[in-house]
Image (cartoon, rainbow, N blue to C red; front, top):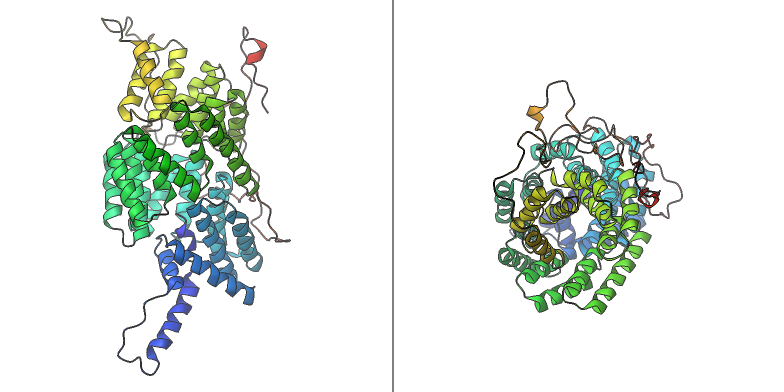
Length: 558
């Protein structure tokens, strides 16, 4: 949810609404009556002020109110920022990317009325959330870091900053930003975000406890739906589909239009062999929010049922949705790469992911997708460092473990392959209707290890994934080793690489960079935006150079 972006930009309008209410209370005839209940605009402002999500009806009322206001007061930069942030949230909640160009125009208009360099933090935070929604995490980091430079104690800055750092794979910086957010704000939204951070570190019990606390502390139906959905996600990811269905169903009772819970419940229903119900939920989720990832999952479910024609229809729809979202500035390369790896052209997937890597998008999701695309393209040796990286950050992902195990199996590393495919099936034996059966077949084909244990215990056996050092294990004054420096010659070492998930990231919290411009065009003719700084050097993706390699193995993607 993007409600944090509205928080402080709404303050002046909320104060105005409060003053009007005070006048009404003091009017003749109202002396002994209780004050009237706040209207939808005031409720949306109050929700924003506490960092909570507003209901869609209240959010729509706020948008209509601010649209009317800026028509009469076009120089009010705060109202433009509130309007732009509200557009971002509505687009995210509905899965409707058409709101993003409108949000960009409103936020840039706010920065015309008050430039970012003069401290227009409201617009900067809105631009950061917009960039995250478009999967432009490098741009989001720039805007959020500039906002933090102006107002480091503004709590609304940090959710955008955390999302940007996570999208860039800078988990140490994300952890520091989370610590700062915890100093500034509390409540179920912060608890829920902290739960996800803990889950990404592999601290499953702590994550579950925080997610439960977020649900217990929720005050409104929308807050409760968000918290219950998060509990459903965690239950699904640890392989408990019955519990996941229960949480998702409760979330949908609180907010029936919650498309994310519909798609989540569909995944869990497939695991319970309730396929007809799952198909209904996927269809409903796509009707509410035409997101390409839903169409891809829906198509893969049809594929697993042998309904190839229906699957092809969903894959075509997925491509159309990526194209439409791209017209609104949304980067769809990751979902397209996942499709190409398993159902299309793996070499095309590699090229798309090279672009993501060069843009600094080096999350575990991108690393896993890169490893799998390289493996499917016949380059298992090049794939291995990426797959190890995705699995080495703490997140316990059945999909990531399966991918790594298959890559190791292709390379003849049968011991590690057994271990990682076992990990996948222990973590979530239902992780994919297409790939989970293949994981079970692969594990059966691998059989059991030979009796007597490893033949050599001196270090010549299969390579193990070493745990990343914690900050306390890094000697004072020295750099911790970077998991982004791949042992493969295919990727050159990066001076901007991030260290271990909770070590200090190369882009420190005290060194903001200027935001990159958003990709979608705006109707504003002149925009006073933060002055761009020189971009950090990006690691060059080099072809594999091996004496005996055939010409087809050389990477020519650009």
